[in-house]
Image (tube, rainbow, N blue to C red; front, top):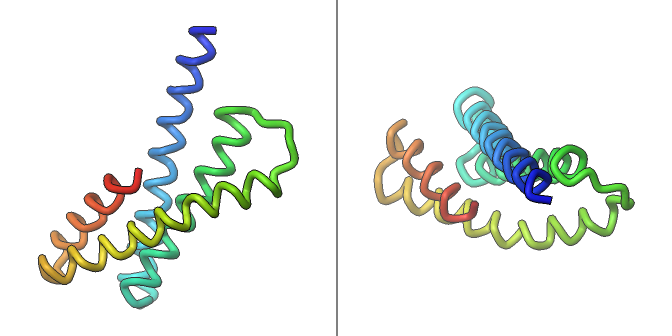
Amino acid sequence: MVEYLRTSLFRFAIVGVAATVGDLIVYTVSLAIVGVPLVPAKALGFLTGTTIGFVLNRQWTFRSLEKPARRMLQYFALYSTSMIINVLTNYFLIQVAGGDFSAKAMAFTMSTLLTA
């Protein structure tokens, strides 16, 4: 039982990192390359990270066999509140700190830590 918990915790942490990296990549590409405005770019990144987290945790971390439809609705209902907090925090911090790269990096980090 202890080994299962240790393995699950390790996998959960790896999935969290993967979800954060997915969020960051989509946010950065959307903002810097595609030219998507700040708020939609952050929301798109967050949704990408949330989807990565759901799929990998379900398939790899917890190896769930139940049908995903109901769980997915519950998961995204919970994370919709987190997304609002994440996107608004990111926006507010960028407005306060300025729009340069370091301000965006700090805002991304702080909003992610706040909603992790």
